[in-house]
Image (cartoon, rainbow, N blue to C red; front, side, top):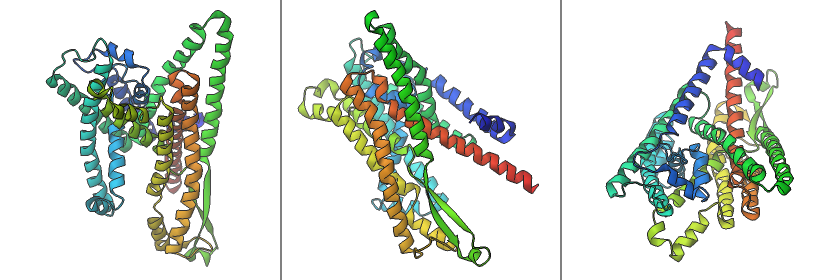
Length: 431
């Protein structure tokens, strides 16, 4: 990894991309510390242990601690993406048609996603502000009038849209997928504080007689992080190589190539999707905390959309599994892949071109996604269950999810840098 970074900084183009990405992330971190006007940010500490706060902090990089303009992070955009992609599956004819129009259709779809992001962000802003204000004794909002709530929602919505624009800039001019890189930066920024919280609770604030247990526990957490990191990295890099033969080349050299399909085809996207899917209803429910808090329907829904409860954790894991299968077929479209192979004069040995190839790829994706879903579900589920069952610090519960995102983004950045370095070598050879 270090040698890759060393070589990357030697190339001007890659170096500029790295510095641009870091500059955008610096702006993001500055924004995450700018408190929304008219808000008493200290009041948020009273509800810091609710299930929603750690999850929102995961996607906003601690912006909720200061109730900053980036408190919602990119979760509204991810939620909008989920909705649009679901509607494109033969539900809304216009969106389906856009999906077939190539680059033009992609731009139209992105525009629709941004408009939906605007609506989702505004609703989430109102919900989270009303909810947290009801939960805090000192009051989150200083001047509690409808106009103040609308102003706060507009500012937070603007912060989310600005963050999405910064993500697009990273994607276009920097390194990696902008949204994923921003979430990655937020997690990394929170990591030292999370480890310090565990250290303080288990060692500093522990009884002197039991302090040795806290030390062993802290060491066990570090070892567990290293083991999970190694395991996740190994699975993320594993792939199934599908042999491909080209009819035009076969008569000349009989050459054979491979179509690599990752074991975890979807990457970390299902985890991010599931997180946003839990956050959105939870934030909307918070708006009804004061008036409907004693109602049975409210208690049931709060129990379902909370990562502090066993049913909530199970639903979260099920969502990860479902999104794993869904996004695998978004990433690798068997129908388009089959058509592209035919156009290139390629085929899979022992499989007829066309419909048979499409069915073969679909079956293969289902098998790979099963392994990927089990893998993602276990890594996200086990730490959260351990937190709920044994009363461990809340920061541990999201450790599995955070590690999945961090490792996935780092591997993607590494692959992109290696690809750019390889491109430079080929260009140099041609010249």
